[in-house]
Image (cartoon, helix red, strand yellow):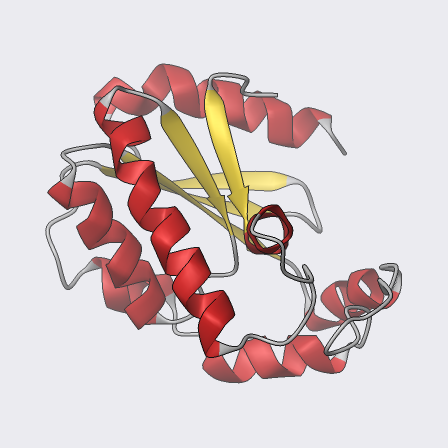
Length: 169
């Protein structure tokens, strides 16, 4: 719904590059995705917004994105989605399982995998100065949004995002 933003979702990127969206993550796939990300720099430099739709569950992955944004002198708005383990597993189970998937996309064990890797955001976000970053915590189970830290110049966009998220329930 934020039409001026380009959304990046890993399975979509893999499909765009000619790979099975839910297939195995080979070195060739990782290189292709890396090249794709590198091509986004120009889009950001001309002022286009990008939405990165992925778990970013480890501090290493989040730091990569933060440093990338900082190197391009662009703003970052982080939206953490949370729900109880029971709700998350029920949602995962209800997903379709695309043909040719390397791993079932609707196996609740996916939650266990991410839960083991999850590093709380506060542990990462306090390690570097985040002058260009606003953070929201969206509890998808009860439909609330906590503003963990919002920069003044992000306020209008934050309000748009909150409206979209809260009205899709």
